[in-house]
Every structure is written in C-alpha cells, then in structure tokens.
Image 1 (tube, rainbow, N blue to C red):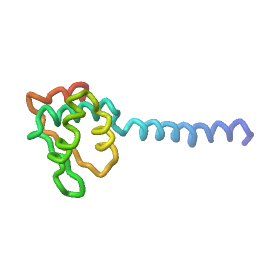
Image 2 (cartoon, one colour; image 1 turned 30 degrees about the horizontal axis):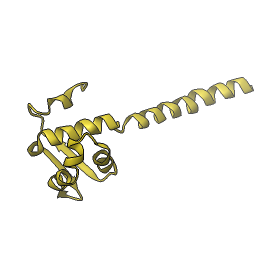
Image 3 (cartoon, rainbow, N blue to C red; image 1 turned 30 degrees about the vertical axis):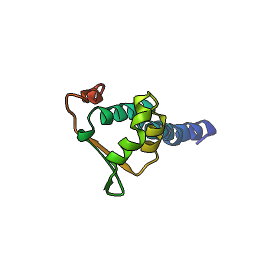
Image 4 (cartoon, rainbow, N blue to C red; image 1 turned 60 degrees about the horizontal axis):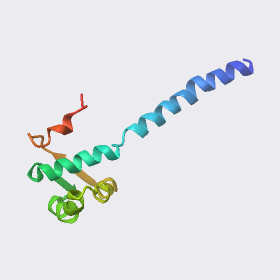
Length: 105
C-alpha cells in the first residue's frame, strides 16, 4: 500500500467517525434556551413539576430560591442550578406548559 491509500483509510475509518461522534455528543446536552423553557414551565405550573436531587424532592426549595429572580426575567441562576447536574426533572404536560412540546417529534 502506498502513502495515499494509508492516509485515505485513516481519514475514512478514524477521523470521520471521530468527528461524527464529537458532534453527536455536543448536541446531546440541552441548550440554555431549553433550560429557560423548563424553568418557565415549572413556574407556570409548579404542581406539574418535580425536581429531584439525591432522591429528595427539591421543587419547593427551588421555587423559593429562584422565583423572584425568574419573575424579574433573570433565568441565569436557575438555569445554572439545573445544569450543575444531579437533578432529575419531570414535568407533566398540561394546558399551561404545552409549549415544551413545540419542536419535538
């Protein structure tokens, strides 16, 4: 095999799959906009949301901590808190938070 064939094989079997994998990993985490939508849904219908951290329901604590800043339009602290990891988010879709389904297939 000559050098051109070896380079072609390396590009096809190593570099291209590596790039595809890197792009898919990057797209797997929700964007800040999606977290803002989630926070808006929690505020719109708190009884339909549940935030769990280490098995404990922290929804009320979350609302007490961030509701005022969210109502003033500052979502950054709430989004950062949700993104720090270890928090399970579940939201029951109802008439007040149907916007979460927009763009989903």
